[in-house]
Image (cartoon, rainbow, N blue to C red; front, side, top):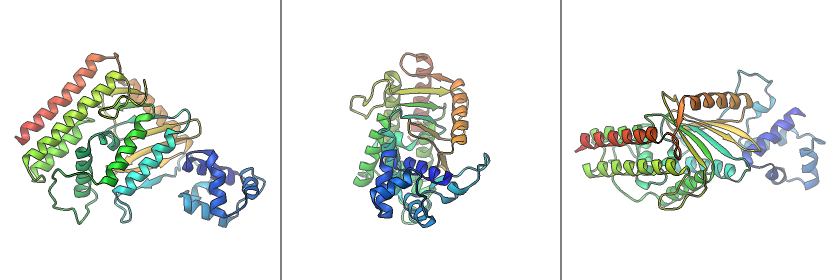
Length: 330
């Protein structure tokens, strides 16, 4: 019966709530409510065929269910933009589903350790979002129909922008602790300069406008730190005291998101720049929690009135970096 319990736990995690499990089982297996509840109570075991059908529909690894406990063996789910049948729309849809699941759960909290700025932090700024997608398609995903296209200011695809905007709204509603490192915002600036030097823009003015957007992003992030709240640009904060930002004194090797709720916990990792892996392995989650606690000990809290001078110096260094980039383009 251990396999059955593990499956039900994993299904609740995938659906975002234990309350949705029974309906999912009834609809997928086309069984009665009574038959479903006998399975969820453990009175009747799922058949192999039933488990296979449910696992395929909800993208649950059957290997995870039957594997013997091994602290050195961890199963991850991947989202990979280099897959031929995967695209930016599906990529954003998956992120939105995860954030919306988390948002409605009690006790929800994100802890984010950032080597590079997480993509959803750009979603207040349509042209920065467009550039990031464009840059990925040119240099990482290597979309054949995009190679060689020069970047120019255009309206972001409506479907993508609606998804990006909804992701940012959901993210802004979830309390979070976020750990930045001194170079977190500089990677985007370097990408703009490098792309300009490779003759990747339709004009110098376009590159400079993007750098101006990075300045506005910097101002916005500083404002969030001062207020201790995440915001949609041009609007009041969606939550009060829902944001704590730390500045790490040394180096964070990757982007890690620790999700904690009263119903389930999970970890998301970036890999190959933009793809991500996820797991709800309890040992890995605890190891991640301990690592992030170590990052915090080596960081300064720069939210509200805490360490105002350190915060001011950090954002000043970002603006200086942008000014140097502007000089390289002018």
